[in-house]
Image (tube, rainbow, N blue to C red; front, side):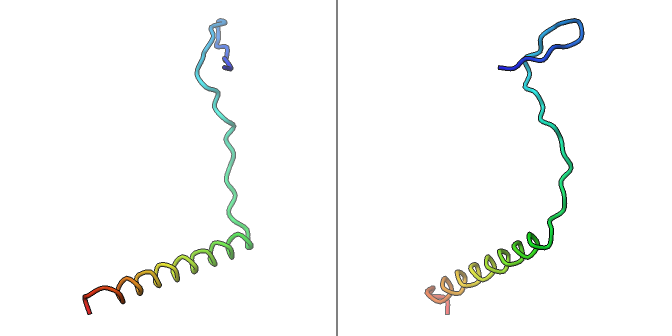
Length: 59
């Protein structure tokens, strides 16, 4: 387990924090991928609701 040394030579056994970095916005290819996945998810959910309503005794 890694230790950090504080001022005065005391050891600190808390976990080291990872380096923080700034997130970058998605590029065009990633945006298109997100759009396609979103449309696919919407179609899948729509078809699921359609099948569930079709086999139910409501109508």
